[in-house]
Every structure is written in C-alpha cells, then in structure tokens.
Image (spheres, rainbow, N blue to C red):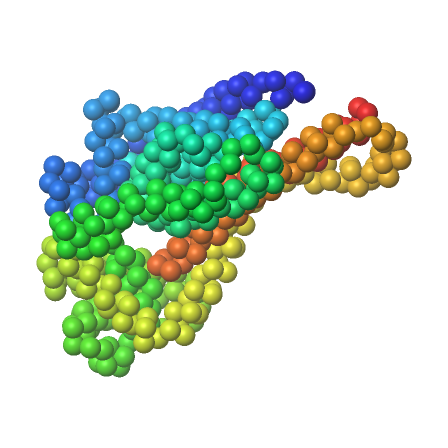
Length: 466
C-alpha cells in the first residue's frame, strides 16, 4: 500500500484545516442576517400549534435555539454548522469503509466534500437560509445508509439513519426526495454488495421493507401529528406558495373567470396585484410567456408580491388556510392547463442540467480535477501500447486493486447521479432549479471525479513502476 493509503487521517485533517481556512478567508464564519432571519428565529417553538402551523420546518429553528446560547449575536452558528459538516464527512468516510478498499482514496473522496459550493457559499448566511446544514445532514444520511447496507444487523445504524433522514427533511423540506431515494439506493447498493460477495446475508425483501419503514415512518408520523394539530397533512405549510409561482404563470383574466367559485376570488385578487405590479416591473405583465428564463424571472414575484399578499388580504394570518387555498388554486390551474405545465417541466429540467454543469465546472477544485483527469488520460493514451507490451503476466494483485477502484467509482457514480437527479426532479415540480438548489443536488458529483482521477493515476503508477 502506498504512502497516501497509510495516511487517511492526515488527508482528512488536512482537508478540514484547509476548508476552515478557506471559509475564514471568505468571511463564512461571520453570521449574515438576511430578510428570512426572523421567520426562523421567531418560530414559536414553545407552542405546538405555532411550531407546526407555519411555513418553516422546525429543524433549523431548533438548531438555532441550541446554538445561540453558545455566543452572543449568533456568532457560534457558522462554527456549529461547520462542525456539523465535518461530522457528516467523517460518517460518510466511515460509511465508505466496507466499499472502498484503498484508505487514501476513501479519505480523499470524503475530504473533497469539505469544499462543496454549498458550504463555501452559504455557511455564514445560513442563519437565514438552510442550504448548508441541510446539505450536511444529507451527506450524513447517505453515510449512514452506506454503512447500514453493509452491516444491516446493527440496530443502532437503523436508528441513526432514520433520525438523520428525518432531521434532513425537517431542516429543509426540499430533501423529502430522500424518503423514496433511500430505499431505492439501498436496494441498488444491496445488489452491489452481493456482487462483492459480502458475508452478511439477509433476505432482500425483508431488508427492503425495513428500509422503507425506517425512511418513511418518522416523516409519516410527523405529518399525522400536524394533521391532528393544525388540520393539514404535510411536512410544512409552504407547497401552495411555491406551486403558485409556477401556476401563476398560466393565469389570465379570461381563464380566471372560468374557474370554480371557491378559487376564483384568490385568482382575481392575484391578477389585480400582478397587473398593478407590471406598471413598475414590465416583465410581470399578465399572461403566459413561453421563454423559460422569463418564467424564472417572474417566479419569486408571483409568490411573494402577487399571490402571497393576495392570500394575506383574503384569509388573514392563518398560514395553514392560506397555503391550502393557494395549493387548491394552483392544482386547479395546472389540471386545466397540463400542456403548459409539461412545457415548464421540460424546460426546467433542461435548465437544471445546465445549472448542474455550470456550478460543477465553475468550482476551481473541480476544474483542477478535470485537468488532472485529462492529463492522466492523455498520458495513458500516448504510452498505453508500450506499457501493455512491457506488462508482466503475474499482475493479479494489481488487477484486484484496479477492480476495487473501478467498483468504488461505480458506487460513487450511483450515489452522485441518483442524488442529483432525484433532487432536480423534485425541485422542478414546484420551483425553478436555481443555482443554489443544484449546488445542493450535485454535492456528491466531485467524489466521482476524485475516483476517476485516482483510477487513472493508479494505472500510471502501476505501468511506471512495474
């Protein structure tokens, strides 16, 4: 085993130190107060009805409540969020242990997660935006899942996995895609485990059922609790607001006049506000537009300046009632205009892939890894014939090592692509695939690049020193 393989702890410690230094240089340890801050800090956690009846999930307000006493003016929050991310990376590293044989590769793969766009951009501002802690918890959840699949008889792993997944969804509801993804990914990993001839056997059906129950039961219980307390089944009272940002694109006065009486007043009130807003913001003119970027530009205004305030005027301060009315209007509009909604989905998915590529390539570390991958590939291409001619026949150990690296790359590709695609498909149903959403969705993609570079470097090392 090479020197790198004997020093995973040094790799991880170096990555933590470098990440902390980079965050400090970017000012990401100084909390930034933004417009959404009060909605998180002031969520009435002392009242069950108040905590469950808002449009914020309870996870991040609880996190704020726990960390704020540590320092005045919320100074401890960015440090606590970074500590959470480090913990998530360490669990992910441990989860990879049964899957990735090379210690150095495992440590490097985990270490690259300490430089994600989400952490570097939002660690400080996450006093108001929950992207960074939710992303950390998602990494933690996947780490527990990787560990659990290889050691399914350990009850504690089932508990930590279920709690981590639930906490992720409670920190940011947009991660609810993990509930169906985790069992699917777990089954795929189970098949991969069988190919690796794992010694711990357990009936696949029983494992799949257990994984479905542990993934869904906590969230289902919470939704039932909300239904009994505030009269709404769901994780939070916000989907109606989001969906109106899409459905509101397709409303016009003639269409509104044909809507059922129970949703028509809200539609007409929103259109009146939109017409008035268009006097100062021409892009907000009433009527459907075909260009995706024009729809994306209108989205936030439709939510927060048009239909949100219209619901306030009609239904008062009851967030649950307003969300229900907005959701009813949105689903009515989308059901009546499915072709326009399908057009939105197609264009939003296309934009989502574009944003994934832009955010991925725009990261300096990813560019460096891509350059290293291309250089290694070009070197192998130029000198492969000579290397093959000089190769010995007794290279079974090297072949096994290469097979292990390829298996690790395939595992990371399964996790990275599955996570990114699931995140994208959930986002576009309700909202545009903004860059920060796709940053969170593509968090595991750099690990695939690390494995690919390691594979090429291993080939070069074997051929050079044989």
